[in-house]
Length: 560
Image (cartoon, rainbow, N blue to C red; front, side, top):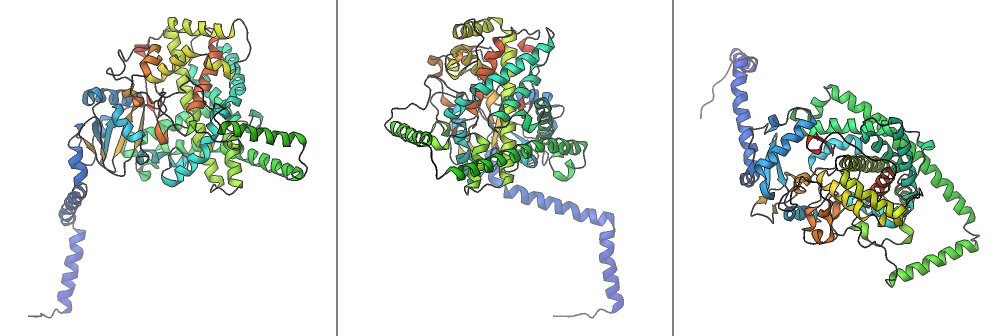
């Protein structure tokens, strides 16, 4: 072993050589390249199983690191058209497909057996990371939450959308439906975009029913709110499909960021106003109840005895909590927590229930309640506005169908202009089939995403979906599968005759999703659609100069 003494001069030369190495661009470049290669090799090796399973799926292979992002340029309309063409090319007859957005693997499913594996599971409930772009808006909202927090929220919120709560909303549905009928008269006989009116109407309905506040309280213009939500969704959708907009650091440098923040500030004003009013109402009610707690009137005692008698009848099976023959937006064979018997005491409107639960010790902060308000307002108004708009457009291009719907309404209402009741909606059998067929052709949410935490064996094929990828459920594609729906692009309400639905897979029609994470507002939406659309058709005849084949669709989160 030999040691060589280095003098100060030699050490200075060594130090100089080292610093020169990093100050020399060529030398730094020569070191950077192998470092990147080593990192890339490590990255690929750490995801070896994912790549092995992904190789079995047909679809776009893309390029390293960027994937197939070059395929999704243009506005939301062009992006949707491109997705539709790719699905025809790679996912025929319900076969699964794949594509890459950057290094993120996307598996596309549209076979009902495979969709059942995802939707019907208590395990595969995690939303995909693409929903993370909603965090600045919906935050801890039930739509994008996962795990135990989501389960707790679902348990708290579901009773507020039980049918026996919704029955009391029909008068409000009708009042706002009649209001939008009067507003549309200002358009005269000229052609106009009905979606703006539907968006404003569904916003006002949600505020008065689920939130329990009237317009004087919230002072929010329904049209402006719906317009702000639509614009914000466009920006969030661009972040989902444009690779360069995904990193927060890059997004903040764009003009989209300032517009995003402006819209979000406006939208966030609504839950603050609503929550402030309802909390004040709750405290006032609680104080009044406390003052009277020791002096129960005979009316209160009799009401309590009546509730006890009703519970006794329910326990004996003498009270029917569901309505036979009414699907409320999903296959008749599917059941979820909206069909559960929740008991008399839990039947409260959405916001009132959350505030009371928070006061009684539930793990709910004001921020949590705000996020649920934003979630319900977004999911509840935009989807219903889209569904009602497509329905009215279909009536315009299919006057023969419109005539049959009107005939049914005349049988129910006759020449009377009386308000619509809950019992009337149960008689709207043909209209319900038309609404269902509209939701088949134009599902408000054309696809949903999940992130499996473990590998999934598909039922329609021998393929296995890798863990930690994004699984897209192609609802739009599923609903237009010719092996399930003959002449799938044709509007045919008879697709939902009882004999047709009974012979179809349960998961062949899922406009509101299904299973544990199915849409909480499914029954609310269907009941609202019946009241709103019947009121419009009792007052107007719908015309459209644009044939269905020329409709230009876009899907910036919600199909329009």
